[in-house]
Amino acid sequence: MTERTLILVKPDGVARGLSGEVLARIERKGYVLEGVELVNATAEQLAAHYAEHEGKPFYQPLVDFMSSGPVLAVIASGDGVIAGFRSLAGTTDPTTAAPGTIRGDLGRDWGEKVQKNIVHGSDSVESAEREIAIWFPGR
Image 1 (cartoon, helix red, strand yellow):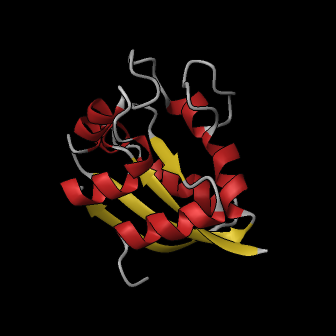
Image 2: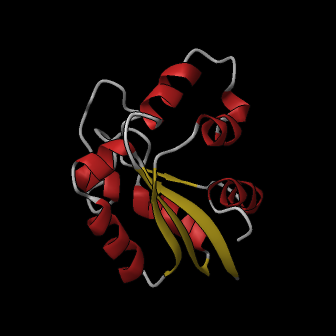
């Protein structure tokens, strides 16, 4: 089934010049890039994106990190793109992510693994729709 997902190349990935590599891996997997935009995340975008985590101890450090530099926001589409990209990204912790995954090949142990792990991908159709509306209003 064709679906859409939001992918973010986080500030650490953008700063390390990995955006092109991430996009190439998405395309090599056979997914279509429907929207790609380099943005400086606003406080409103981040509050909406991470609303479910508000009040948790990692919320403010995560928001601070995500606003520390540009983010590459991507809409990708294709059959099973949500699960497919999450598999392509690898596990959240880059030190244990499998070789061949984005995080396994490109990630580093920064001491803040959940935050500085190069990419974000929507985890469900509902999340994808909500997140795409935040980062690409009207799309």
